Length: 377
Length: 196
Image 1 (tube, each protein chain N blue to C red):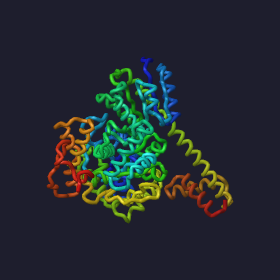
Image 2: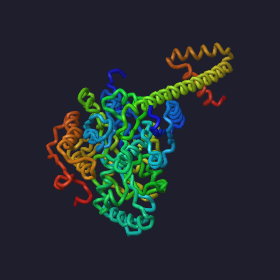
Image 3: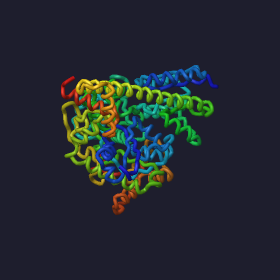
Image 4: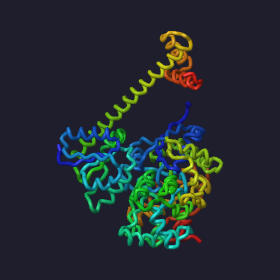
């Protein structure tokens, strides 16, 4: 088709890449005059590298990874801006059947993240006593909400993440294998990889991102700062196209079609039925045992796509907490250069939101975001 | 030449890994190790204790490797990605070729550059080879399907092989498609009708 602008986007085979895939495959991009070329990659490192050398104009990115790029703590990264959030929630914490058994022995019944964390703390002590080793957990990247959410939850439940467990990195599609083979005792990962582990009898979901920090951002659209500066008008249309796609993805009547589309070998390459639980929020937490999780994953509702500086500052505070960076004005400036609600508002012709920005810091709890499990109520 | 360096090639594609290993050995690097099995990768790296690690960009374990390199800073020799920001041409060439390299921090650039350059050129050569092989394969498949379609036409229309080919070529030109695609459609239609 003539007159379309070519945009190259990298993504990883995960459910929260849905907005990019539907925009490219179901015509939302073309409706806005864009030919969206998708490039599936197998690691965040390769997304970063290919963004760095200009192969991609934009990419599916872990929100903290975008911050890390602008902080200069990741190799080879070029500056990025995040004018849009691609999904809220969508991750789950899964433990091995052995650890689940040890948790059950403490009298634990599914009752929110605080109860699960208490049971896990006791289970880890028993594990250490019986197997004389610490529990091993995996996340997808050091600069990820998976890492920070898991650590936040553990720490809030009295488990010191750096001393009482080991936390390593495993790529999402390999999580089910890693837990089934006993290399790890638990993990925090985006869907469908918890569902797949559960259905293989290799794990039990004990809590979710939506419960640890309700309605919190997960992946963002990372756009090369150069592209944003040189082709602002194309970026506006891209944001509008992705927003349309996100609204489509959110609608329950589209979930079956969305699952079929993403299940394709060229995208996630799993059975459609393994994508459905996350889309409906009715998770299979153990084989045959369903549990409804409110707001498990949100693509567009509740103004989900608008990046919030408050969330960026909160992520920075977690990077500081786990000693990945030190608190500084330069670091706070980096957050401002990444999270760009102004670009989102401009693209969708919205009035800038006047809600006060909460500049969260580690020590100033008054500015912590809403929805953290141990602070609500 | 720096024959004392230990180089680790991490690649699930055994053929490609073998080509790189051979080239490095030929160039005089005596200590080259190849890991194609990703299970227990981190432990293998600890055992091998390499100075330079060459990894393909499609490897899903790159995030795990980079995490390990960062974590091991205190106990082991630090490993960093081989990037010299001034040398963007080299970075681009590597990413273009689909390869990345990690080196022990402090290792001089001139000692590592020839290794990376060699990996880049071997990766490119391997892609070229795979592409050519793929083309040769599909060419062979095309020829087979065209032969089959010709046979069907010859039987059905009682015409010669040349006439059958001209018929295929004419419909391909009329429909603006490849001859092989017309042949493929004909063969599958024929098979569907159950006459094969």
